[in-house]
Image (cartoon, rainbow, N blue to C red; front, top):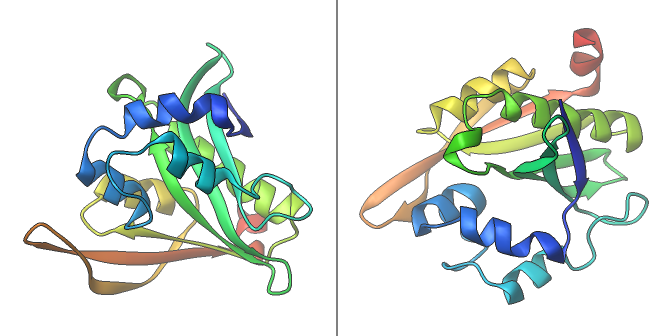
Length: 177
């Protein structure tokens, strides 16, 4: 069982340690940050976040409640109360020891619940690079539907990366409950 807790400055070093390559950083956050991550960029990322009533971003550390260990990171950003929408981003399962244990699906479901129940959203979207098959399967298992692909949106070294857009609507989520 996992629980989501607000990400704070005490989590910076853990996240910086996990993001140990430029490729992983780009896969995690697109071109939002420069490699390597540092405290200054983490402070900027956290600024104005984590006020459920006001912020346009909620940033979480993911804790395995059974072992009381931080196992991942996830963000619900781009929160539009007017349009009742948001976008899941920066999804990361921490170390190799934590992969393959079902954390991804659990953390996605937990963020979806916050979006639809606590924030009264109508639509939650996300984007994932098309080569990340494990993430695609996880998001589909959590109820997300593929809307389309943005081809060659990012160039990393000599390779083009395409982004798959996915979403789930409140009625679809409620039917799954």
